[in-house]
Length: 297
Ligand code: C5P
Image (cartoon, rainbow, N blue to C red; front, side):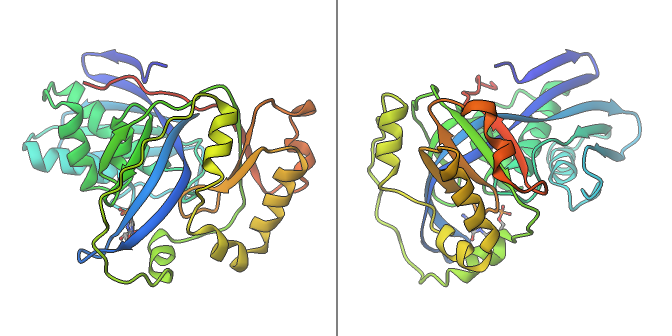
């Protein structure tokens, strides 16, 4: 999969993929206000698209299509990433940025973080800054905990607050149904509600070796998502989605990140794609595949 669609002198078009958390364990609260996590991140084939152009003035102008509710100023991670690059590297030029949004927003799919990563990468390319993936991931962490993942191979065991990445090889021979209800769940609120004690987590030594889909489903049976039980108690719609995924034959179902997107894993896509049998029209459904990401160096 090529992540750069197009590049000329002053313009780059980049695809920014979503991610799911195949499992997500919260280990403890840290003194910096974040939480240490242990998670398995997998990139999936649902993409936002960014077009970035250098402009003459110093302004950053962001236009968003595909979702009218998305902010275009400092509340947007793309804007913040572009501003960070401007400040850090002290250049006078501004940017014209067009963002086509397809990844559901605030859904646990990392869409905003993927867009921020693509912005850092795009500006690095356009201005020939010569940053490698590690340097870009470090900048990305200043924008959000999930951003560094998008500089990985697309399949990574993730620890720390999201910045410690261990690329792993996971099977790609399956399909994923993402189901996103229209629920707003705050990431910050979700972490706070866990009321975790301050801990210094022990080193995690866990080598993941799943040779095929069947193996992955069996292995993931031992790991869950630490936000899921509470969120299913709070939002009955998530239980409805879970039941619907089971009904159409998902071999594993789970919430991604802090939700509300739930996903089902399928060895084979069910007859008629199954999603129409899910019942509710206000759920966004996307059939996707797990993907790997080419290096961005
Ligand atoms: O890093 P990001 O800005 O995406 O995180 C949003 C909020 O979620 C943080 O301010 C923090 O309250 C919480 N969070 C956390 N531990 C993490 C990631 C996020 O406590 N590993």
